[in-house]
Image (cartoon, rainbow over the protein chains, first blue to last red):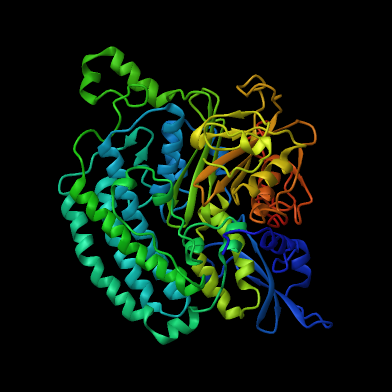
Length: 423
Length: 178
């Protein structure tokens, strides 16, 4: 089967499943049953517990069946791309880390890779491996959060507590490394903010020892459970050509059987030196998307294990004086070092004129960062290609023809993080 | 790359070093940063041809406002416009990427929509319209996506003034502190 076709594009472009209705129109007709065709417009969200924050979906219903729908976003828009234009490259990571708040390290990584591409600098091997280990741990934390909220959305309320608890263990480790549970500002252009602390191996090992048993419990609680299967199997179907046409990446694309993972297909960091499998589904349903994320936790653990073994020694950031300030001790001795330090943190470093795009495989799909530099210490334009923003467009196509109760399962399986949707 | 011995059109046969066929369009960058620079008229045609060559996924579409940078580096034969629309295309089977960058004038920037070929650009084009005021002709629902429907102006434009604009809401709180 071909992965893309013009027919599918044309069918999706015709938008039979997308409700074309403005918010003003919706306000007038909401909740009124049309006497002619017995359809009704209903509003779900933005304050609905299953919409993961502030997602609003307009649904056109016939009884309990969803005919067409339209996601309405923007409730969390704070102009972060505009803000980025007034922050230096040193400060930039602080801004982007707040976009996808469930996997902040990926935002920092995409931003840093784009800046480094423009600067044309190489980062030390240890920094690369630290980045890889930390982002894989972050992927585990993010998928655990997904399992927790996915479970809760479908009525497995206990799952919420278990998922959050395991995630918290990882966040606790992050706190020892970065100082913060979330929004770390740890991965920065040129390397990482600090070296791994003493005893980091024990912290990682504790997570790796404890988690497999928990994952088995999750299997018992959800994977093999008949009610869980009934609620998820065959619900919210999507095919490979549809996902490709809509630009969907990550677990949504992989659930259709297309093995596309940037870690393997466009290796960045040191992913070409570690051994892991790309998890794919078969049916493109909600269950596949759940199972992919569950098993990706196991694959991430394999990668973290290898990082633990292979972690090279050396510098945790580049010694290029252009981006890295001189060591603290030098500042006491040298006036030039003090000035240099001062310049980097007030004015920032200059980045050569040009454009660069860097993409990483975030837990939600391709997270890209496009930076335009005009040679000054601040980007002329910083754009984040947010996977949730694009993936959200699959929702109307997956909802069509389903029951309204399945809407909750489907939205949950897309795993949108509104912070990066609205930016 | 070995072609079958039959006659192939010149434009397909002429491959640049990065394996992307040369479409008679100026290009810049190389490898993963390769960009093609068509005119606004040749834009849709180029995207169509790239689709047939395997660039089936439109990963990203965004706008850039280059106000005050008319003499920036561009390949020969490309006249700088104030706005630029950047389309990021991906070939999943060939593991290739290419960017398409179109220059648009300050007055009335418009382009044909890509939604017919890449339905996933619907939200991206709405965002670019919302933030830069670039009009995509033929778009099924070209409305604001992130900002309220009655917002005035396009905030990611460089001349959108910052910090002095009262927050716009449809129904201000009655008796609130104005």
